[in-house]
Image 1: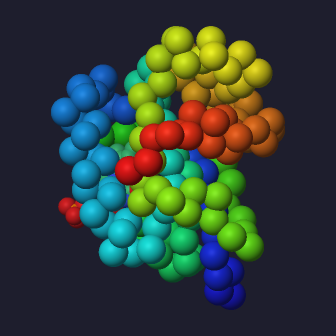
Image 2 (image 1 turned 30 degrees about the vertical axis):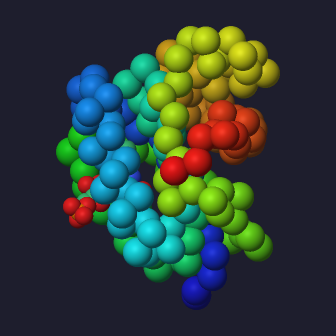
Length: 143
Ligand SMILES: Cc1cc2nc3c(=O)[nH]c(=O)nc-3n(C[C@H](O)[C@H](O)[C@H](O)COP(=O)(O)O)c2cc1C
């Protein structure tokens, strides 16, 4: 069944520490492809781990997620959630990006449990505030 507009969240681990240039390469390709495919969302990088939200028509999200899952730059992908949504939460970002620092985490102590160095998949899964963390971090960070 076609779910229409969906939102998907996963966490993963970078296979090696990524430089700003390497992260920028991921982001540039993401924005270019996502604009073509009607995908919006946000990518966070912290302590060698990723958390990403993808939004769009189900077929596009599935195809993008499949491609991302095959990318050797990360592994250990854990799908946290995929659900139908009425409207996009990251409509303005073909792919927002933030590299999280200790200072960012200090600024958002209410979300500190989501980050035990790396993203804590269990906490992200059970807590439900991962999306609000992403939204609070990205404000003023349009791509
Ligand atoms: C953590 C991570 C997130 C990514 N996010 C996206 C994305 O949102 N959209 C996308 O098209 N590619 C994304 N990629 C890159 C894809 O895996 C793939 O390299 C890229 O889409 C290939 O683009 P090309 O076919 O234009 O060369 C991501 C890769 C990684 C490692």
